Image 1 (cartoon, rainbow, N blue to C red):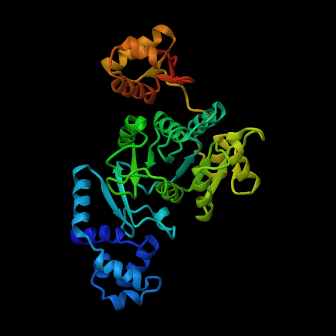
Image 2 (tube, rainbow, N blue to C red):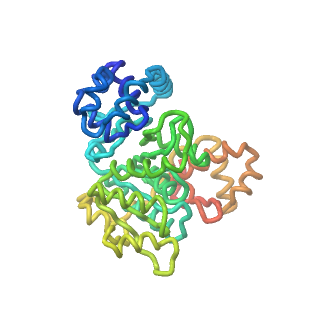
Length: 374
């Protein structure tokens, strides 16, 4: 088990200027541990391949144990696990990647060593076609013991996380910022729900903002964690294509849903398929077949629930309100319910995850017909 001093020194090593994850692997390979690195002389450090004079001086002058101790205290207070590369809790798929992060901060309840892990990525502005493909994909994976990984962004990421929970699957959101905040803020309620059946993962320290340079680094974690990555819908540029490219470099399987040649939001997927950077799939069944993830007793579609789960008093009230009008928009619900928007959003998300509501285009809600309600 790692000592407190060793954990502190591993954190300190990550913050040294000019020293990246590849350099850290090289340093620990030579020294044996992070603590041993800080005990080396300048001459010893300079002799390590890839380190040189500038990095050696940074290591000697940049050790800041107090900052690392504050981060450890923050993690302890907030139920965050600090996972160091080379320890048993570090995800073994990610550990195979040459540029994997030396440290991960994880808040969740699902081990990162799952038998089947799938990354699902796509545009922040999906079309109806893209939304349908994402929903169908998640429905096809229900009951197949697949952990869903995505980036908690608007659009396809959000649909993947929500539908995974709706179908009873665990899901992990990989963040491009620290665990002291949730970005985008609109996904906060969903993120909190994910911690109970999955988790939130990042290499970023508290206080790190979701700045542009952090997203490609986030994408490499998504790609490295998974057996395969699916691009549901993407324009000709964007983070989804970056993730697909990284996944290919890691020798992961990459899949993409095709679209019409004239569809702007399918240009990225069509490009990946045309250039043999992704396998074409038209349904989730195609993915299961390619990955050999079929269960012997699996039906082609999940069965509709015959009974609703038990609802709280407030959930019951909102459900009955929507049922009385067949469909209601979020604005109509706000006017009729007379409750805080944040509370209403949390209740609607809970009802959606329990499988009792459909979210319709235009942010409207409708009940899912069943045989009865508990």
